Each structure stands twice: as structure tokens, then as C-alpha cells.
Image (cartoon, rainbow, N blue to C red):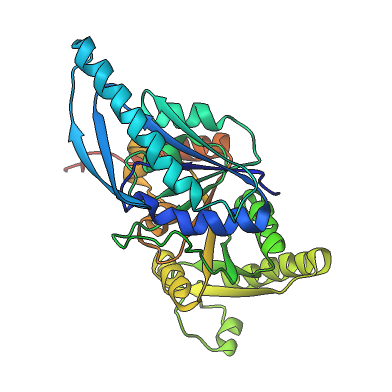
Length: 334
């Protein structure tokens, strides 16, 4: 799976521009066209005044849509400022991609970005984790998203991200079916190593091989099954894609182990499945993907997993959690 289009939403802040070095790298290696997007919210005008060629600061001005003359004037002012701002950003991409366009839209940020990006699976949405619409986009987007931790450091106009390894977190065959095509496509396109990772909750971080022969170990079966599964995937990729593929099984807390491993690998890109939980499901279940995206020191490629299966799993979880008919809610007294 490859992408031919990189959509980059920007809000004019230094934090939002943290995604630009990574976007330049992917555009240079893939030949994809880059589309810069900003959405002007009609209820809240954000005036951006670029202070240096690749960064700006924001001044937030709230206007009432009912005040039509003032609102229209400020909206047009913001659009003109972002047209000039995007022109400066566009110049930094001239040597990295063959085609770059800029778009200033008006409406709700999440809805307009999704509408603009469309439903094509060859689209990659690249955005900073601190963007106001990132969480909503993670829930609603059906295509891969590339996320990078925000930074207050002003990126150079020539900065590019150095990538060496794609760390693919596999949480079962269903997630692998969604994540692997995208991760393998990027690794093959850029000549990166693949590191397939599985995490087993309850497994100690350190263990001896002879422990696997002890039937009393609760995690023994999980380790053997994970090793067999990862080895099968490794052989398949190594033979078909002719690239370096390694596997690793992590013990302890999944989130902590993935974050530690990502910080140890220079030029790491973490690829994982995002279930797109929202509302009550996010509060009750959360997800390793959501926590890794918020805390990862490395950029993250989040691929949306099958929504219908996630919904059915969520319904079953809620039923077990709140409507267990055989378990009385109030202890019986004699």
C-alpha cells in the first residue's frame, strides 16, 4: 500500500509546524503531492501573523457570526494572511516534491479537513499531536494518519526527518491485516528496516528459555503463540519483500515497553492500529495506540482498524461490564 497524496493541516503555530520535516522526507521519497490546509472557523477567528519565514504566533479573536460586516472582514483578513503564510511554507517544499498546493477553507476544522481529504485510501494525513483537531480526526478518519510530537523549537526551512526503522506493533492477526500493508509499503519505499513487535501483558521483562517448559507459567502459551505468529509473518515478508525484518516480544506494560523501545532506536517510526474509540469507549477501554500517540518520542503512523469489529467488541465489553445478569449488583444479606 502506497500513498500519492499528503494532506498537511496547519494552524500557523510553531507546534503545528513540527510535522513539516517529516512531511518533507516522505514527499521526497514517495513523490507524493503535498496539500497544505488551514480551516478558518466562522465562530472563532484565529489571526496568524508570521514572524519568521517558517513559523508564526497566534492571536485569538472571537467574533459573532451575527455581526456580519465585522465577521466577513476578519475572515477575509485571516484568509489573506494564511495565503501569504502558506506561500512561505510552500517555498520550503520546492526541492522535495513535484507538486504542492495550498487551501484555506471555512467551517468546522474536523469536518472540513475530512471533507477535503476525501475517502481515497492513497491519502496520508500528516498532523502534529497538539493540533486542536487531532483527537477528532483520529476518531473519524478512515485513512492512515502520520503524527509527530509538537515542539516549541522553530523548524528550519530545510529540516528533514531521518528514518531508519519501522516499528510495527501487532496486536493480533486482525490488526496486522490493517497495519502491515501500509507499514511495509513505507519501509519498502524508503529502504527502512522492519521490526515486528508483540506485547504480552503479565509476562516478565526478563525470563529464561527453560521457563517456557514450565506449564505453571500463565504467559507461556502466549509467548509460544506470539513467537510462531511473528516468525510466520517475518518469513513471509522477508521472502516477498526482500528486506530486513526482525521480531521482538515485549513483556510488562505494553505502552511503556513500546515507548522505551522507540526511544532506543534512532530514526524510528512507530506503526500501529488505531481503533478510533470515542466517548464512553475511550474512557472505559482506552487503547495502547491512544497512549502511545500522546507520549511517543518518535513519529507515529496510526492506521484505522476495522470499525465494525471494534464496535461489536465495544458492545460486548459494555454488556459484560454493566449488565452481568448472574452477578447481583447489591450483595445479598442473610
